[in-house]
Image (tube, rainbow, N blue to C red):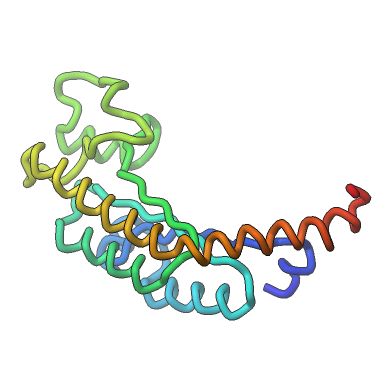
Amino acid sequence: MEKMQEAGCAVVAIGVESGNDDILRKMKKGYTTAQVREAARIIKASGLTFSAQFLIGMPFESEAQIWDTVRLAEELEPVSVMLSVATPLPGTELFQMAQEMGYFQDGLSWEQITTKNDGVIFSQRYPRPEVARIIQEVQRAFDALQERMLPVKNETRLSYERLYKDKVSPAYGLL
């Protein structure tokens, strides 16, 4: 972390993805929620800004597991947080899995496969209105976290401006 700060790094963003160890294992992430907690602790203790990205909507994920993700995001309190819905892009293992599970029997629709999709590969145990409800409720929880962290985010922005003006710009002959 020290070397990153010396190089001018101000933010470390990590792809947490899920707050559930079983989902992380099924996603083949190679880390646990305990390791995520430790990484967040180290980043914050170093004085760098901690940012995190999360993902919901895997075809094997239950609503309870999705709420584990919300709880972990709230616990970690990243200054910046991003929520995405799983997107099975062609050529990926997730796309292959979705095809094998019969998600695209009627053909591929690019309106369904976007980076801001509507949960096209959510577990088939949930009817479409339930999928929409889950996504909306989870998004509201993430929005509330963003709102709660806004004062910290604003102060962080000001400190970046000071860093840029006082240290980074002169070091690179930009001022």
